[in-house]
Image (cartoon, rainbow, N blue to C red; front, side, top):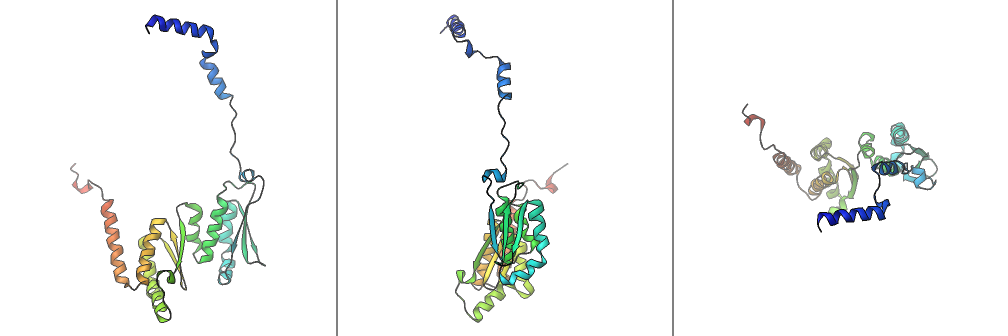
Length: 240
């Protein structure tokens, strides 16, 4: 089509359908007149229903819970805006949402926080579950790795802990995790990748590997990671 035909087509279309040609100012006014919806609050999403979570309190964690109640209450009630109460008859910590709860996921985060404390983690370590979304608690038992009884089981627990907790602390520092050894149950708090590395080390100790071999493996892993993130052009090689 030549330029004259294209021009005549525009004239015909513009005369026959004037609504196709809109003023830019009208488009701007149309966009500004659109309705803006405010984000829904937690009680509005749940249609006014209160959301509940209940965390059981083991008998051996009742006394530590009484001592650390204020440390648990402050971040849950004041920061996460979640109601928390203790049911003395059922021995359960009850959590529920409020009208001013900012996020729907806050209730589950608080439940995970209280549950991790019941497993034996310190409040300082467990409170990271409220602040970071990439942390998880992984639990397993010694019998899941190897069936041990009697003195063999006691020696395996001793290898996991080490003299004065030396082995456990070394694994925690190397993998950036927190570990709780409660009889035959083991709980690990950290990211997914770090939990996997810590679990591999603990499984090696359960299967009978000496602590020195686990230490050397951690040193090799740290050296490999440091080599991987090493800068391509070191500062000392730069000529000014």
